[in-house]
Length: 391
Image (cartoon, rainbow, N blue to C red; front, side, top):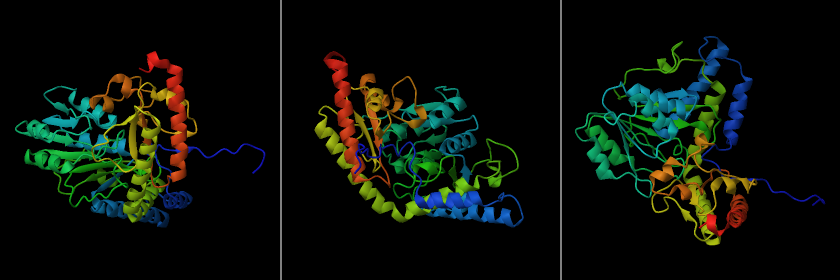
């Protein structure tokens, strides 16, 4: 070792914001970037690009157990959510959603309905972030519901929703069902042959693919008129006009294939790392607590509240750790997390909550470095805040 002070690599604990690209996805994306060809062209280079896109569609379909023809490539889950919701809602009937959805869903349904109570129902959740099944069934019965949109796993807490009873009740009421599965896909097994949703949104960069590409699943049997957001040359069977992002799509496919091969082992390993992180943090920082700890959660996600220590101050005090104080898409928002408030946290506790998320490339050494940094940061912030402020 030289005389220079050794500095360990930062601990990356923000997989829910974006994951490092898997080596397979990086290699495939770079190879596609070197190729020349528009997937809509009929010459050799165009056919080569189209072939790469077709392969990626098959790779993603294999991960989801659906038909390749049921997948529409988009720029990401935000666009996929918008496309799904605007396509399924013709300004008639009722939309039902939950209070803990991602802004890409909540803001879209509010824009579609004008936030009117006779066209939009936003259901509350309990302290674990779960819907009440009986309350949900009551909300759909005899109400002329057109669409139900409930996320599969929450982006801030990792809380998983059991969609089976939701889907059954919604379909019994004649409604279509959409789910934002952005945080779930590629982390736990997902079989669309058994999960009977009509539409599902995802993003590549949440499971090791590149940023700026995602997909929308539309079940072939779903009675849905085509309502594209972008008009033009009729790409993606008329659902999304515009030249395809071939390198991004290829990277998505490669990431999907890699994730499918390693899904069970990764989920088990990442769960152990999350449990190690939570155990160490709670043991060394008394008074801290985990949100949604008593309900099913994603393997690598933990939402930790540190009463008396504002999250923004914690994050500023530990530059050697990449973490988040909520959804990456809501960074800079002046108000506390709507998810945590919906779960019953006070504004002070919601403001004192840090999201830590791990994934396929996280190491145990990163967990230990991260825990040490978190303990130092929270202890420092609480000392600076003083007993009056941190009470």
